Amino acid sequence: MSNDLPHLARGVDHAAFPTLDPARTIRFYRDVLGFPVVHSICAAGWGRERHPDFIHFFFDIGNNDRLAFFYYFGFDPGHRGSRGDAYTRFDDGLPDFFIASRHLAIHVDSEADLNEYQRRLDDSDWPTEMRVQHETIESIYTHDPNGYLIELTRALRPVTPQEDLDAALTVDALLEVAQAAEPSLDLLLQRKAELIVERAEAWHQALPVPAAGRTAP
Image 1 (cartoon, one colour):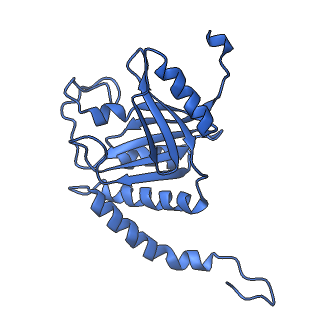
Image 2 (image 1 turned 180 degrees about the horizontal axis):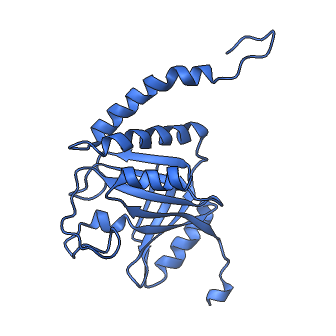
């Protein structure tokens, strides 16, 4: 049966993980490996109860694929062992939002393709658990037989260069705020606004000079 199904997936849209140290995460992927920051989402809570404010930021890892991280302001997951990664060191009391932040998102090209995958899932033992539009994408979610959260997603519109710049500003602000005594989304947005003011003159000077005989818009 599966051999007769058209293959509509177009590779990895993003793989997402939680981070407990966003400043070091940004320095490693952006400053050491050279992966540009291409998107970010700041949200005051999300979804179910006990969900803290968070930032979700994305690195370009080539081939239109992205690696994403969640940082939850003020959230302390508690005891961590000395082995494993930032996720596997925790016990069964970990909140659902932290567990769900670790997922794989597979890209499809169109709404019709997304609908087709939802149909396939809903006709199976692993039906669609959620469908949601958020920022620039629309996604469906389910858990695979191993318990891994799987997302299938399509772009609602292209991400603009202005949004790439916004993401870069956001993570620059996060680098500073994450090291504060009590980091918060409010502090992040305040520092981001300050960076916009501080850098506005340099951006203005970098604008192309209008052609001779023409006036700037």
